[in-house]
Image (cartoon, rainbow, N blue to C red):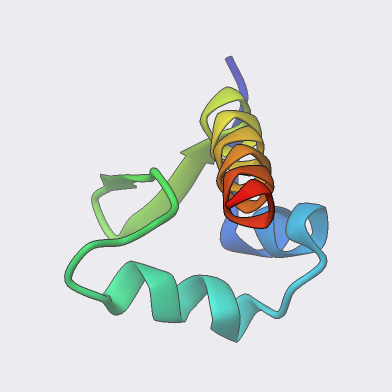
Length: 64
């Protein structure tokens, strides 16, 4: 299992690093992550699952 950095997640999602940070600071972060000491890391499988959930939610909203 490989852990991703904020920079890698931002690149994968085609968003800025600031966008990723904003989700981590919110009360209910949307992106699943783990804090290891002073570092924030993401499991690629969790990020992929999150992307799939966002697509499914968008499809449901379009169908309604």
